[in-house]
Image (cartoon, rainbow, N blue to C red; front, side, top):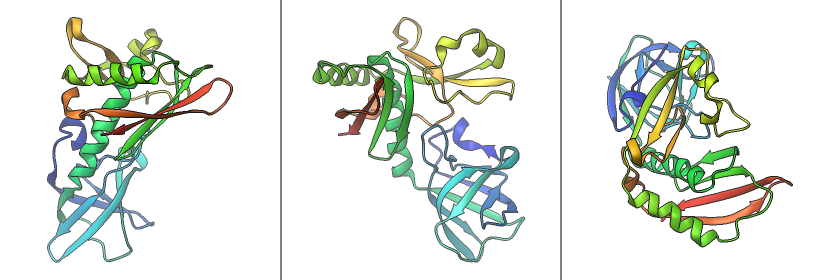
Length: 238
């Protein structure tokens, strides 16, 4: 199992590690990593891996078996040997933009309080699909409400509940198509706001900014019809 340093500190940009395995496909498994693996609509991180006598560009990271995170090189070239001590350097600007978009999408699900049927995150924009029969009548008002939440500079924190607590509170799950990972005994929640200022609480394994003000202003894109009861709403970082 790879220790997920990105979960305890999503702002960690560099960290040492040790190579514990190399996959037959040419992937690299470390004992701990700052690289978030693709999941929950958020793409895997990119960056660089350095070791004595070598360096390799990492294109992305994916989930492997038994809790491993597999780093995928951008091009075929010599890999660090198993047991090597390496230094991880995250492509930070890209990661930070992904964090901003991801947190903004959580807020989008607040201003559009409908079940979510899908979603996707990139470094410049993101989108959520909603179980929505008719499109919103006033997109400008939705955009204004979303930016108002961002400008409140609310804290973004994590909490944990048991699998059973989640099962007893199904309303926490906003996504219709993807259930949060269960079976590990506990589930991670992302909370936006605190106390009487709390605006959102939902299961999520991704990386987020520490406060909503860090997102910056966003713009809503076009709203597309993706089925009789499905509308796609996109947002872009300004």
